[in-house]
Length: 272
Image 1 (cartoon, rainbow, N blue to C red):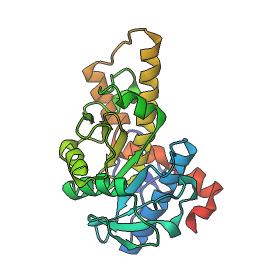
Image 2 (spheres, one colour; image 1 turned 30 degrees about the horizontal axis):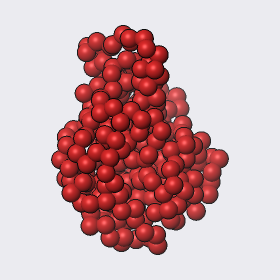
Image 3 (cartoon, helix red, strand yellow; image 1 turned 90 degrees about the vertical axis):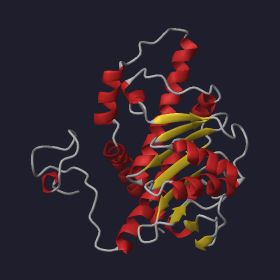
Image 4 (cartoon, helix red, strand yellow; image 1 turned 180 degrees about the vertical axis):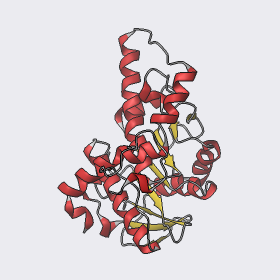
């Protein structure tokens, strides 16, 4: 925790009063320090998916670029439950799907989707994908989210529906490239008949929180649809305002910090 007044304020949520405890991203003295930080937060992100019940067999993969070698990325190992991922069993993978550090195999689908997006979008630092209940259900509709709440508005003009390779297991490289080609500047994608993907140009924390938020938005949307009541839609002006102030990359990172602190304090084996 740093004094927020020692760094530039980028959000209205940062306190104006000095001397208060408030999360701030650390500054790193070396690539190794930043690598450790990214790996720790990747493990916490994976375990947060376990906390939220996002596990589905071996499906699901989270990635973050290596700070020194950005053509490589760290990811969770194949066929290890989200709750059992730790620092020591993360693997480092290249865009060809080769494991260059670590003992475990890489998830083929994870390599195809994430490698293509990381390679075609060098500004994307981190990505998340899992086969979640509500996300999978909403993706079957082939529709974007409606702006029915402040939370949904965090995805205002920042998520898309991708129909290419819909419903097919993404194990062929062309499937990954079709998703990467459609991604654009969005933070999230609803892959039709498949599931949710999020990406961040900021941090794995940001990508992970907005994945959690996207799954929740899908759940709320399905509940509203099931009610049969026509919802009031947030105006474009209000949705854009919410997207700017409560839907930024920094806010995604900030939302994840209490999750990280909880996991780090209650699951210290994550650092093994």
